[in-house]
Image 1 (cartoon, rainbow, N blue to C red):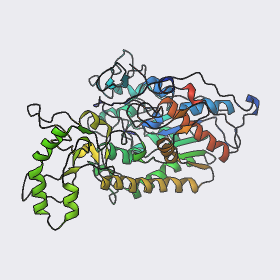
Image 2: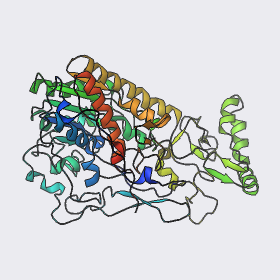
Image 3: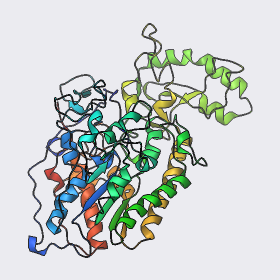
Image 4: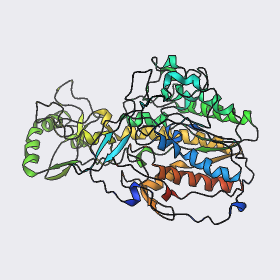
Length: 506
């Protein structure tokens, strides 16, 4: 998934406890002794993982050391070592600050979020801490210090088609936007691609969780990108666009083929893509986030009276849309006002009749909107509060048509992933979407504790609302192990998720 700029700082209602902040003193008792562990019919001696930020161990809006050390591939490798697994290397950063130095200048890329638990109003603020600037840290201009590929080939921000690009790790491409600083930092050569660096290691086992950013970038942008379905030319794509599903399927097949060609006996694990409506980045900010008293509600109703009347006049033949667009407030919780490009454009007749309405439960507000709602769009105008007097912008919310666009693409991508796994008996399909959906609906009891997708307090997701905590990654790793044990007749022990941290407090 995409790295994100940390531009939000107001999330209320966080409850902190041993269960969500640090690893409590829980220990799993392995049901068998070490001598009973078995690799089954799989070979774990050379394990390579490829993917995006989820594979890299990205968390709290940044790539930092503790996150990498607790990436789900690193957790898996630790357990694979008990059944003949070999060395597992990662391109580790040097500290827990987050961020990268880009070409000696940009020292403010994706600084890590921590929870500021000092009592405030609201009671919890999210503050970024410093970027990675310690002397000696490999920067993106020093990629050639690495001449061998790493076992963890997770690159934050990578879309599926990026993984085959031979310019994605070239420092010269940073200014052009054709390279990724996270891959530039550890590519084996300036013309290496993620897939060649992965497959050329001739792994005995590979795990691929790739394609998330092909929909997630559009989602986190609030749907301001373009759905490129029907356009198989990625050179025309913007950073927030959705990849054409047919092109996605072809690239995915080629990537799997690179591994199976390198080693005909390779075992592979293919993970699918979660539904964005099951992760807290899109479920935390309520649509009815505006508390009002009666006096303020009455004043707002008076202010919107002319807008409501104008809409009713121009849409007299469309009562359903009139109802949808009529803005009213009452004492208590109120829906925020948003822009909706799917509404009939009335501005050609009356420029004041903006395409706006109040949000409903069918809309998904993105997490950064939490710091925007109620603040002033114009500091000199006390009536310009975002989401109240001024509608939230397109990038602040996913409307139903955008949500449908995302899920249509996601389901097509997931069908391609499942088809690739079904086509080869050596490939295992893992339903990551079901795991994340379970976290969102019922939560997961892992035996000595419980986690769910509640923002900050649920324990499963880090403070960016997209990437898991170390504990969340441990739960995902355990599900992968369970599926591997069944598919490959292995007996690999799981970890105790309670031994892994969740959110970090400043």
